[in-house]
Length: 273
Ligand SMILES: O=C(O)C(=O)Cc1ccccc1
Image (cartoon, rainbow, N blue to C red; front, top):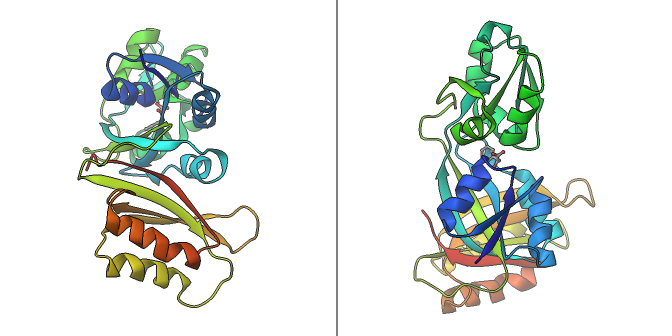
């Protein structure tokens, strides 16, 4: 049976994503995305599921940084998971008594308008995951709530005070499945890369983008993160359509390699969108 590491405890969106990917898998909860990646690297798990991008908040920077700096695992797949948030609390809690609202920072960000409108005086507190947030709220005396999945509320015996509190009705999160090896091309794939430049010069980034344009390869995302070494220097990340084994992709990677100081390929995997 495939063992899949995810950001737990059970009831999180990470668990929903892992179940969506493989309903028959053995699921292994870990307390952070870094621990999820480490579990796959150590061989404790076969695959790891991590959140990479949300419709409302954009990229999950913690995951981008893990891919850039902390792991050589390859992306095996992407999953798009509907994300509906609920305000949950110890049974009997009155909304008027709620002073503290716990959740994962992603969830707090995705419910910003609801929090401002309905709980302008409550304090938002970060938790390691949405399920941990429910555990923290249940430990207090009726003055706390959490933003979490309905499943977490059921598993922990919490009451749902409000449903669908996310800022966008169509809220979704894209998750990545990390593992070893290169999935075979399907004809509808995406490749993710990161690169740096040796020196700051006019047109450096344009020269890379022009190589994609010349090869008629569609870039689906571009992003930058600090190198964490020198202020003002960045790692650029590009997602594009195609697979490393497609001749056109192989060709474009060969063209851009000499333009970059470092080039890291995070993987080629079937497109979910
Ligand atoms: O804490 C969770 O449930 C997670 O899996 C992280 C997360 C939080 C909110 C939206 C998507 C993922």
